[in-house]
Length: 237
Image 1 (cartoon, rainbow, N blue to C red):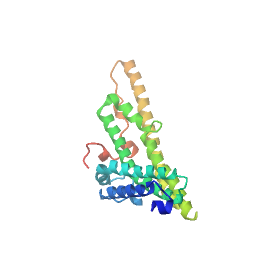
Image 2: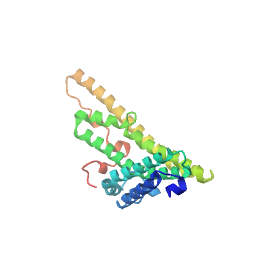
Image 3: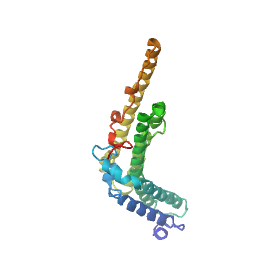
Image 4: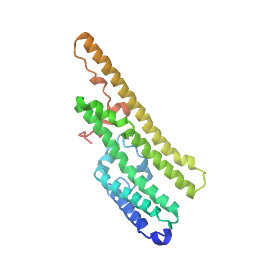
C-alpha cells in the first residue's frame, strides 16, 4: 500500500499502519473501547467512572509506545521527496495522536492523583509535589495542550475532506475539553495561592504569639478541583 499509493520506498507508511492497528488492538483489550470518539472525549475524572481508569491502566504504556511509533514512521515517510497523497498521511497521524492522547490523559490524571497523595502523606514535600503540577509545561498544561493539538489536526483533516459546514460543531467538543482543563488549572492555582497566603499568615501569627500554627487545613485537596478522591493511589475502586 505505502509504495503504490504514497510512493514510499522505505516501508514507513506500512509500518505506521501496522503499529497503529496494534495500538487499537491493545486499547481494545482493556475492554474500554478501541479508540472511539466517546473514549477520546471521556473525562478521566468523570464521577462514577473509576472503572475505566482501572481497566485501562495496565495497557497505557504499550498503547502509547505503539501510537507514538506510528507518528515517528509517518514523520520518516514525509521526508521522502517523492512522497504523495500527504493528506492521507495527515489522517494516519491524527489517528495515532488520538490513540496516544487517550492513554496520555489517563497517565497524566494518575500523575495529578499521585501528587495529591504525596502532599497528603508528606507535609515536608507537599508544596513541591503540588507546585510542579501547574508550573510552565506542568501536567495541567499538558491536559489542555493535548486537546488543543488534536483539535488543530482534526480541523486540518476536516478541511481536506469536507466543506466547512458543520465544522464548528465538530470542533466544539475539543473546545469544551480545553476549557474544562483551563478552568481546573485556575481552580488549582487559586487553591495554591490561598494556601500560600495562609502559610504566611500562620507564620506571622506563630512569631507574634510564640505558639505553633498550622496551615494544613488549607492545603489544596482533590475536591477543590473536581477530582474524585477514589482516583488517589490506594483508594478503593
